Image (tube, rainbow, N blue to C red; front, side, top):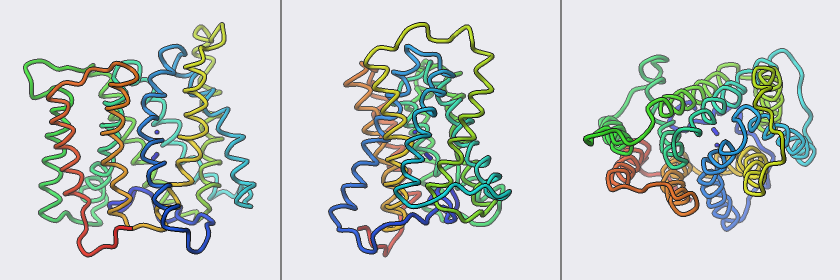
Amino acid sequence: MTQLPEKNFIPSTQIQPTVAPHPPRLATVGQFIAVVLIWSFTPLAAVLTVHEIHWAWGLFFRFSIAIPLAFICLFYFRQKLILTRQALISYASGAVGLFGSMTFCYMGATRVSSGMISIIYGTAPLWSGLIAVFILKREHFLKRQWYGLIVAFFGLSLTMGLATNHIQVDLLGIIYEVIAVLLYVLSMFSVAKVGADIHPIIQTTGSTIVSWLGYLCLLPFFLSDLPTQLPSLQTSLALLYSALFSSVLAMIFYFHLIQKLNPTTVMLITILTPVFATCWGFLFNHEPLSSHLVIGLMLLCLGLFLYTYRKNRRLL
């Protein structure tokens, strides 16, 4: 699970990881593939987690595992957690995209498929652009981008079955996931607005801690759902995967890619991830794969490509 100024939805104030001056091309390609694969499996991990553990406890366990891993990354990058007022506000802004977004994402995961979760999260750049144009009023769309928006949202409606005789998905689950994406986008804008200008690993660690404290305060309302036995191997692996790969490793790779590649190439991650996530859900969780979902997914990818494409840019 990520997760916005301009058309690239990670603020420039966070793009400062410490990396080698000129990483090999092969390593960059490997990081790109790794991020696509990790994030495409993340919705499936969320769905498998909530099948056995209540979503609130699942997220609490996930962030409990992610915090020590984040501190290991801090040590590796030779960074220290900053506790200034501005940094704390930045952590809280980032927590909107972790605590808030992940809460609704996992709530929705109890109702919709992993492929649908990834498809809805794939629309994050579209929501980001709409906010930048109509609310912040700091940019405007080209004609091609308007076409891309229309095609993408039409494709999204097809994946949900809205253009067929009957809706194929749980509407409440869809609403949860859309709220999750909007909170994620809002979080990225908020972090950029605060402008703390701190290392992305510090930002990630601080926001993870704030989110963990939020879940700690939330748990008393779900004491009756406390797991009474150890989860199965499948659920345990899903939790470990979400904490290690989705919450930490993929973010490190992603920040590196932002620094080394142009926005068009990085945005290909958003286009490819829903495609692979839908395949993984079909193969490993027996999720239905209808014709209107496939066509809608293709239109969504086409719309995203039209929306994010830049001419005369170096791709790799």
